[in-house]
Length: 166
Image (cartoon, rainbow, N blue to C red; front, side, top):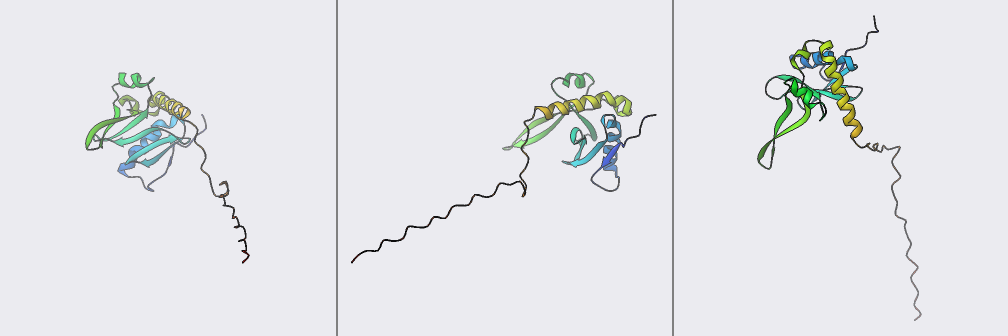
C-alpha cells in the first residue's frame, strides 16, 4: 500500500457549507495530480496544486460545474465527450457579448470517481503547465530591502554674487 497523501488543503470558510461541499468533492476527484487547494475566486473556486490553477468550480446559471483547463490541442477531446466551454456574457459600451475561457466542463462519467477523473485531471494540469510556460517571466516585485535608493538631486550652490565697484 502506498503512502497516504493529503487530498486537499482548504482556504476560505472555516466550516463546510453546501456552497463549498462541491469544491471539496472536486478536490478529491482531482487529487491524482497532487494535493489540491480550493480558493474562493470570482464567486466560485479556483482549484490548484503546487500553486498552479488547472480547474474552476463555477455556476454559470445551471448549477455548480467543474471546469477543466484546456487548450487548442485538447479542445477536440472535450468536445467529443459533449463537454461545454466556459462561456459567459460581458457588457462593453452597452453591448452584450459572449466571452469564453479555455476551460471545459468535466465529462459526466469522470465525475463519479478519482480513477475516472485521473486522465482528465492530468490533461488539465498539463494544459495549465503549458500555459504558464508560454507566459513571459514576471519580474519580482521590489521590496523595501531590494528597492534601489531614491535618486537625490544634487544641490548646487549658486555662485557668489559679484560685488560691484561703485
